[in-house]
Image (cartoon, rainbow over all chains, first blue to last red; front, side):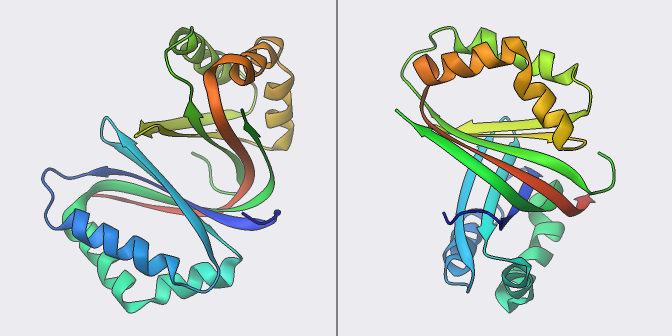
Length: 102
Length: 102
């Protein structure tokens, strides 16, 4: 990851029952996102039904570019139609970061 | 959650082996954080070893206040000593949000 500032898109969700084609499409979207200009990385975890995915982007222009991608647009439509009971998207500007490695 | 802007602290981590007193202390810290001035909420998920916790705060002052809490300071010391192989903290200003409920 570069030094801040950069952007994070925090996506929290609860899924519907069943797969309904989600897993395959989600893998395709992760791969496609990684090819976008300005993509910096992604981290994902899910347990007890709550999923959190944080994707990182160089700037807001990169986020808008990914949002306009046609396959992503179709996937977002499928998300509302089939895959999610609820979700929330938060777009945030990362201002500082620090880490620890043992 | 209020309308943006507000702040998110994105904490990603990989744990060490064993509990080592982590679970009890983590529950205490979540309860204590919720009592802090400016605390807005928290979401957490972990799978395959990667944990993501996002806590939400009214402003940077609230984040600094929590960071200075003595019990939290001691827990952060224990985190480096005992509980985490690695972690990263990213402090971000949430600029917009939207959601969907079925």
